[in-house]
Every structure is written in structure tokens, then in C-alpha cells.
Length: 352
Image 1 (cartoon, rainbow, N blue to C red):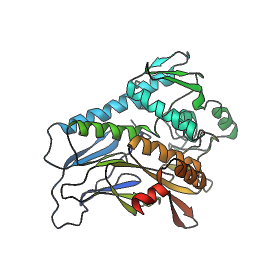
Image 2 (cartoon, helix red, strand yellow):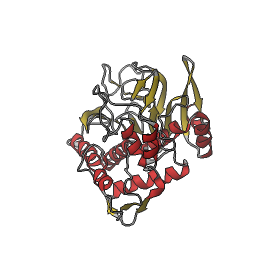
Image 3 (cartoon, helix red, strand yellow):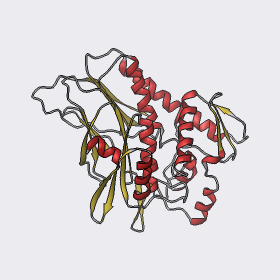
Image 4 (spheres, helix red, strand yellow):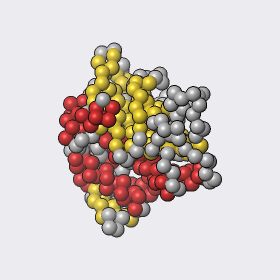
């Protein structure tokens, strides 16, 4: 995978602090004089980084098992690999049912349900719009070789005619998908990296591990506590361009967290920033005052898709939706040159 893979790169600094985009995994920060050493590994796959830390002795071949899990997700759901299951589905134009893996079917089914719940704020058929704005696998680079460009209004209107989750049908019993419009293109980048985290979690659970922290492209899941009894600590990143600072530190136990924002993947045109977060209902990058949204949930896939959905909605609608559906959400809003913070009741109950 290349630039806009759904799994983003991580950076490891001294002191065991991992800085993936949006969420920071603070591995060695219990404050004890001498913390038991954690086993683990990190690596690169699909053009991104991932890391696993766990309590106990190092487990032989676990790193290869996790790598195989992530490669499997890439094989199924990448928009950058022409031979991936998703790419093959996107190229189909005959309107027939297309059989996919059970994993791909489950991810698409979850996405379709959320599309209904959010009135289309979350929509996996947004792919053509993402390409049009220069952020997707099918996008042509700008004249200067960069990615990201402002398309003409007519092109946006024409592309919007290709968007709509209602043009998808799914048969979970047969693991089959049908496109009722042949030009529909699926892009799972708002949900698949969370799914990848959950797949790694399942692999670690199958090995009997009860203490670990998993990070894939900035999305995290934790189980239990560290061997010394302290909590796994993660930090939500301050949404500022060109800086890597901590905004808030959270303790994560038997939960997952995902963050969406407008400050990492964007371009400037005429003094205005256009982010990769495209509203599938308007065809425009969001410009609603939200800098980032973080969601804590039982699964990383749910957290990933919900953070994307709330980012598209804007602050007021996002908070109302979070309250209605008991979602633990933190919203960071732009307030002039400063930042403001809003929490849903479920988030305040966890971290108030």
C-alpha cells in the first residue's frame, strides 16, 4: 500500500513512547521505580507501522502471526492493491452478487448499518469523492506532483451521483455483495484499520494473553493491566499541524480507542485547508469547527467508524448522536487560536 493506506505509520521515540497519529501509546509510564519489562514487537506493513506490547515472556513466532493477520486484512480490504478483494469488487460492473470473505462481508455490513444510523454521514461508497479531491488510490497527482486538489463544482456534482450506501446490498449468509449501481466504489479506510486491530486482539486472545496493548496505524486496544498492576496509558494528541504534543492522557483497560482529525492529511488552496475527511452527502471536505474526535468503545472497529462519523457530523450533531447512542466521545473544537473540549456523558463517566 502507498500513501493513503488505511493504516498509517508510527514513530518510536526514546523511553518506550510510541507516537502513532492522533493517539499516543505511553508504554513505560507507570511512575514506578522499576517496572517489569514488557515483551513485544513492532513492524511495518502496508506502508504503515504497528506495535504490540504484552506482559509475560516473549512468545515464539507471535510477531510472524500478527504480521500474517495484517497482511490478510490488506489482501482483502486494500484500495491500493489491484488484486485485493475490495479492488476486484470495485471493478465489477455487471450487477451480480460478488462473493467475498466473511471478514470483508462483516466489515461492510457493520459499515452499512452505521450509514443508516448516521443518515449517510458514514458511507463506504465515498471512494470516488476521495479520489476526486486527490486523496485516494485512484487519484491523479497534481501538476506539481503533490496530492490533493480542489475540483470543479460540476465534477463534484457528477461524482455525488455515484455515491450512496443505499445502492449496496449484502447477503451475510452467502458472504456476498451486490452493487445496484455499477459505478459504486467502496473505500473501507474509515473502518478497516479498526478491524485490523480487532483481528490482532483475537490472535492474542487465542494465545491466552490477558495483558497487552495493540496499536495499528494510530488505533489502539488494550486488555487487562500491565504486569505491575498499573494501567495502560494512552494520550490523545493535540490536533496541531507539524507538532506532536499530548492533549489528554487516558487509562485504557479492556477497551479500544480511535481518533479522526483534519490536521494530518490535507492540502491548502487559496488560504483554505481542505482535509481528507470528505462528507459523502455534500462532496466537500468537512469544515465544521471540529479538529478531532476520539471514541472509546468495546471494539476498535466500532471506535474507528464512529470517530469518522462524528467528525463528519460536526460538534452539535455529533454530541447529540453520542448521547443518544451512549457513545464515549471526546470532541476537540477550534476556538479562534485555541482549542476547546467537549465530552459525551459516557466519556465523562469513564474519565470524568
